[in-house]
Image 1 (cartoon, rainbow, N blue to C red):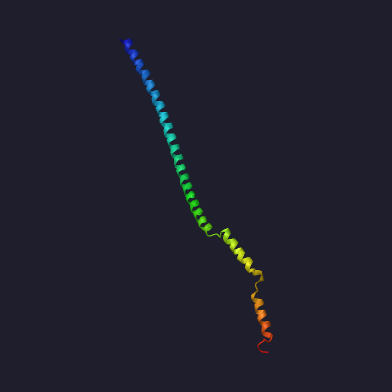
Image 2 (cartoon, rainbow, N blue to C red; image 1 turned 45 degrees about the vertical axis):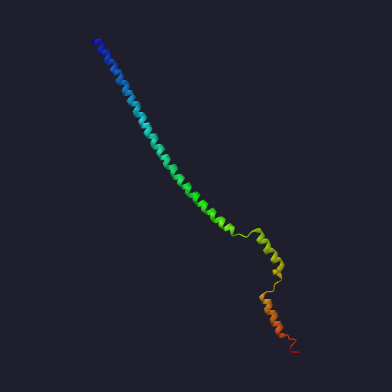
Length: 118
């Protein structure tokens, strides 16, 4: 019986050593898992912040594009410009008389005797 007893005690000690070894491994695994979780949590927060910034930038870009489209709708079309060009060419504003020239002509005509008074 003493031989069986010492054999059982030996086996118990081996099992205790294995359990202690497993506890150590589990502790290291828990530490690594917690560390990775904290890293992933920080990364996720950073990604969420960047996403919010991107969404804000995208919203501002959309609003700017909407404003640009509104302003572009107010631009003259090429047909409108061609029509204006046709009228300007027809009127030929370079042949218009200036205000100074009109006043000068009035003064000159005022000095000349009119045909009715003769």
